Each structure stands twice: as structure tokens, then as C-alpha cells.
Length: 399
Ligand code: BGC
Image 1: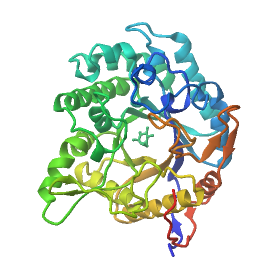
Image 2 (image 1 turned 120 degrees about the vertical axis):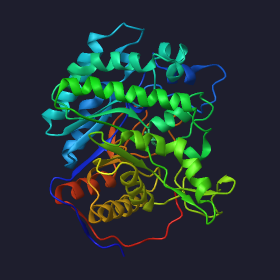
Image 3 (image 1 turned 90 degrees about the horizontal axis):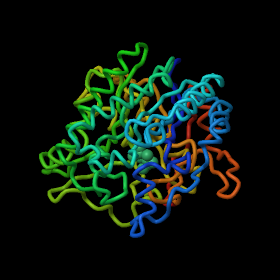
């Protein structure tokens, strides 16, 4: 049995989405182009997604009505600057309305400026390989400042470590164990872009900025400790070290990765996984928080993503409750964890497919009608009471 857990007053509870995964019709982006290439490697295109571009008020209502205090969403560079230097006032106004809609419902917005997708023109001129990429990103951030007026929490780049690994579109999965090693030059450029964006944001005043890292909970088999550190540095640690001293760092964890002498160790047959084949391992979150605190001591942590892609909503709740036990333990150890955001509010476009369902809410593919799952009510109750109720441990091998 997992015992009841109490969280401190003021702990932030919320949920997250990202533009390309829920808005639909992100036609000026590199992902849209990839989805529609005749020889595309992706199982399906994003299409209308959850139509959150038009239905964001319904989404915000779901967050607020559940009792959650924060909604993390991203603004889409490809919409705001669809051609180099051509900034759309209408799209900026759209995102400003979105921030206002969140605030009007008494929810705190957390805005991500870059979540995996690039404007197609930016990708075509070399993306994060181009030496002037940080300046182009900073110019975009400067233009977004009016949207961010009175927004306190801003993420510059989501999972720069994954961006660096996905750079050549060789693979889709957001799993470091299954992706090529990052290109060190791309990683350095991303760090430079993050720093330039933070300077621009600092100039506006009142903004806490940081970036959000795909934390993999790398674990070494006995004797493979050095191999593990070597594996982890370019894929995660470089980015966490760069976050030290920022206003906050986002920890995003979904599982663990065991590293042996030959690199990632395949899962043993029969291991319970999510729909993507990632091990059910909720202890990964606490480990990720501890590791981040070791590399960036004193930098406040927000869990900006954590979730489980499953059709079994009870198992989602099991995973969330067990993950929160790790957060509670980290707080007990004196680690400054400010909040927990579940990924994701909605079932969404999981970078190539709608099959992996991470959402607290499902929706009808024809009508877009939102249907909250029991997990939304469960997390809302946790947010309202600050208590994760006791939950029997269950053995499950479903997805
Ligand atoms: C990303 C999300 C993604 C989730 C699950 C994170 O790596 O930020 O966009 O949907 O993991 O793969």
C-alpha cells in the first residue's frame, strides 16, 4: 500500500500541452512538412489535432474546473514568424488572448517558446546548425514579449537534449536510448540560444525563465558507471549543467534507462510498458529530480512533464501517485521542488501518431468534443486538498 502523501501549501499543480501536438494545422512548421513529405517516415499526420487553436477556452475550462492551478502551453514560432522577419500581429494577438483566457479562469500560465517544432524556413537554412540561430531565436522572443506581459513562468526551449538528438529527423521517439547521440555543435548552439532568450526575457522584468529537460534517469549496471556517465553527459547532463543558476529548471521524466557496457540495455521480456514501449517506472521522477539538483544545486525545480501513455486510466493514476511519492521524498530531502505538471491535459499528436494516449482528457476525432477521464478529477482533487490519497499497489501489465 502506498501511504497518503501531503504536499505543502503553495505547491503548484497543473498540466501541460504543446502547440503542434494539440492546435492543428501548423502548416508553416518543419514537422508539418515532414508529415506531408511523399516518403514520410511518420505513421500519420497531425491534421486538425485537437483543434485547440480554436478550442483553447474549452481546454482552459477543463483545467480550471478540475481545480488545477497552472496550465503550461506553448506559443508556435512557425505561426508567429511564418517567413523570416515576417511577424504576424494576428497570431501574437491570438496567443495574448490565450494568456488572458488562462488568467481569467484564475489559472497561472506557464508559456513555452519552443516545443520541438521550427518554422520551415528556419529548418531549411540549417536550423540549430546555423551559427546565427541564437540571434534569430532571440529576435523571435523579443517579438513575443507583449504576449508575456504579466506572465511569470516562461520556458525557453523544451527538451533541448531531444531537439539535439532529433535534429536530422532520423527517428521520432522522445527516448534518448533510441536516438543518435547529439551533435555537440547543435547542443552548444541551443545553450547559446537559451542564454540569449533569457537575456531578452530578463529585460522585460518580472519573468522567471528556464528550460525544461528530458530527464532520462540513466542507471548503470554494476561496472558500467563510467559508460553511463559518458552516455548521459551529451544526452542530458550538459543541458542540466547549463541550467544551473537559472530562475528554475523543468524536470521531465517518463521512465528510466539502464546502461550496460554496450549502451542501453533492452527491457526484459514481460516488463510492463506504456504504449510506446517505455518501462512503467514511476521511481524515475524522484531519481530525475535528485540528479538535476546534484548538477544544478539550488536551482528551483518544477516538474514540467510526467505522465504515462495508456488506455487504462486507473494505471495512469497509479503511475502519477507513485511518481508523486518520489516528489514528496525529494521535498523531504530539502530539494526545492515548486510544482508538478502532468503531461498531458489532452490525448495528443505524439510526434507521428495519435495512438499513445497520455491525456487526462480524450476527445472525439470527428467532433472534437472533450471527454475528461477519471484521472483529471483525481489530479484536481489532489490539487484542491494537497493530499495524494493512499492507493493500493496493483500488479498490472496492461497498457
Ligand atoms: C515532450 C512531449 C512528448 C512527451 C512524451 C516529451 O519528450 O516534451 O512533447 O509528447 O515527452 O513523449
